[in-house]
View 1: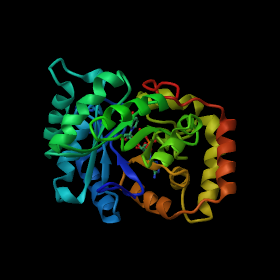
View 2 (view 1 turned 60 degrees about the vertical axis):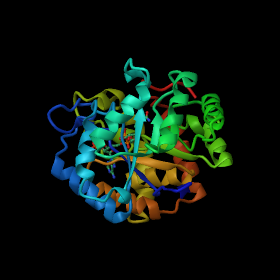
View 3 (view 1 turned 90 degrees about the vertical axis):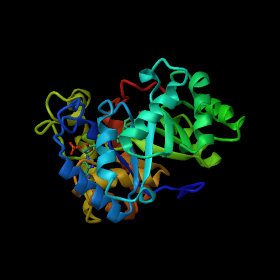
View 4 (view 1 turned 180 degrees about the vertical axis):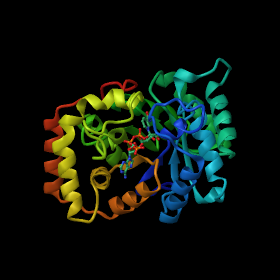
Length: 317
Ligand SMILES: NC(=O)c1ccc[n+]([C@@H]2O[C@H](COP(=O)([O-])OP(=O)(O)OC[C@H]3O[C@@H](n4cnc5c(N)ncnc54)[C@H](OP(=O)(O)O)[C@@H]3O)[C@@H](O)[C@H]2O)c1
């Protein structure tokens, strides 16, 4: 799939957890990541054709972008695509805080353009959206999208960009089996009708839907994701067991089925990749066909888990 001239692989790669790497990591994920390990992740991803990397300044306050920029130095710039974000809450006080934050991201990522630049959240749509226009005109930003916006805010941002001859080209929202608010609010349908790409983040609920974690083997102690999910792991067991059993029939694992579900729903999942073998899962997920019955059964079990995984930064859709 493409938006205009931007190549979009079936799955995009998330690097929030990469902000944890190194001494200055903020411990959000609690995963020990090494530079050598992340280089291996990138090599496998590139060999498999997964070349779109999603990051943000606020992931480890620059750390994710810095590490990603270092790791990607081994490839030609035209061989990968970069997606990063302006976060209104971290804006500076200059005349153009969006342009400033972009310049800092460019420096950390070691590049002079961003393929897909996002307004991270709808803090003030009227104030921040117009700042994207000169960035598009200068070519420093090739495409733009909005994240965590509800339908009304998306339409508003689209009108603002439309007046300058641009448009919202992509949406990036939390969308998983456990959290389908964008679907229920009509955002997926809107995207389909308008030819806007829908990127789904936290499809694996930060590992809670990977089947790897359980009450006996919880998410890393002391991390923010442990605080969010460890209390609900027992309620997720029927769902993760079902994901595993659907996977088994196709020589795949639970997280591959979770990712395949998002693809089947018309989304481009952004999967947080922390280990090289997770790329094998993305290859399997991209090739997997889920039946209508599988999808209904998974969504029924997800609803029965009766958990709310809305992030602290998210609004109701
Ligand atoms: N726009 C926004 O507001 C926003 C918000 C959140 C995220 N995002 C973006 O979306 C990306 C994805 O979200 P996320 O990283 O928070 O969560 P996620 O993709 O739901 O989960 C990532 C975690 O799942 C585990 N995992 C991944 N693949 C696996 C596999 N094949 N098998 C077993 N476990 C697997 C890993 O945990 P372990 O390391 O413990 O193995 C990994 O850290 C982020 O990195 C970021 O780029 C955007």
